[in-house]
Image (cartoon, rainbow, N blue to C red; front, side, top):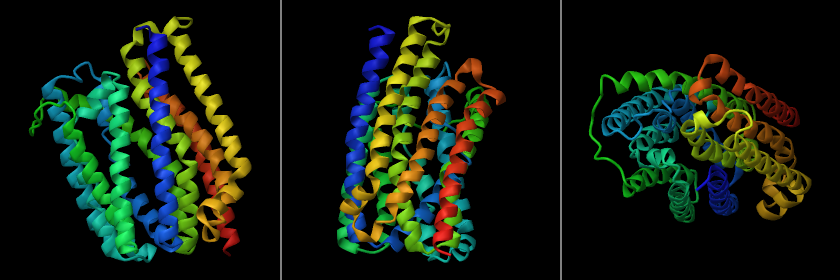
Length: 384
């Protein structure tokens, strides 16, 4: 199979399965918005932002490590990575638990919610390396079918809890059980027999590469979550819940871009790094695929922006009507974040792996941060 047909078909697989995944998320959001009030979703926004922050700010980039390393399919490398991943997850969960009383007082929410959510990083760290190996092999079909299945299982769990409990514990427990189910499902895919191991050669190499991942994750977290943490302190929880709904929708383009970037572009670039000279067939196909994807998403974003007020009112009801104008503004930042995700995959390539490369890739992230903070400022003024 040529590079052209390979990357084009894999991109179609990714976009197609993500469309199905996005439909599942939309359905879940609509049902939850009908069953739960905005103030409950506001609490979940804060809990998710804190949990994700603890996770991303210590990100080892396990998938990027496997794809980047020439030893990415070696059993000792994979077990060293798995060991570091589990230890890191445990430490992050303990750190989150220790910070729970302080954060609960700061955001004026029940500390028990944050205490329960603090288990999420550890549960997530228990996944096998199978999905990382699938990314290295560019097995896009298996990876995307796995993600779609995990989304479907998470949807069922969340909806059952929402129908049963109808309070804040429904989405909170839904987050934990969905993460646990996803980690368990990774062991259904081909993987080496995992055991605790720290290889004296592979472990330092993993840490060396991870410093660039941590820098990238820091900028990503600043752009995606700082506005939520800020609003969580200064606006009512109901307003934060409405804003969180708009952010969840506006993040969809960046999510699919992230899948393309790290399931296709980054593995493709790492595998064909010697075939990507200017004017080469592989480079032209990569540029053409990127251009077609950006044009497709640009049309989609413009369409949603034009109909956002009407669509939000019809789908989510009067309680979430304010999310319409918020969504229109946030999609501008979503477009910028999508560009950043695609750039990052190129800048983490072996020949560009430097401080300058990673900093250059985060330039669009800074623009998105400005867009999101301007939207947050508008919300603050509206609630003054």
